[in-house]
Image (cartoon, rainbow, N blue to C red):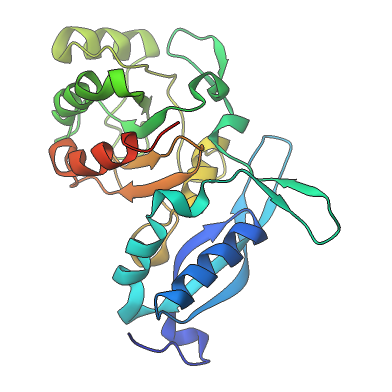
Length: 255
């Protein structure tokens, strides 16, 4: 494995954590795999609307990025929600269950209703070249729903203005064109100052290309384990069929 040395210019971010304890767990796991890693304070955005947390960035040498991603994708690595401090106090690690969202029907709902499930959270659009991925997402949902897998769709109009319709129009389109039965939510922003707190958290938990937090296009996908922590982030071109093996592995983990 390559060595990151001491210059930050030679390092890239593989992940940002909202918990210093989890960051240290990840760093230790990388070191055990022969991958040198450094921790750095970093902004991770709002976990709740009233909260803004300073995160901890995990940095590795660019040549170790792929290997580090493999180590950090191990579901068991972050199985525990609670960690004991030296003082004996307990730290509650934030998870997707801490967030509330608005359904496509306009009702507020806590994501805690999905506790113990495997989630695939996707920013979707109705007029995109990748919109046919709705069909693959629905197939994944139907194939693994009995094992506790759920797709959550969040319409967004930030990429090429390809989701211009109202929530009612989006709901009708998904139902009539792709027979979507998985939960859909109200249209949101996923980047910028108005980004939904859930997506700020998701992006902080799992960064994208070259360590960027920004979502680059429609149909970016976040795979969330049964513990409410992000396991993987997939770009637009990672089709539902391509990520199916990751879904199978995630649902195989006992609740």
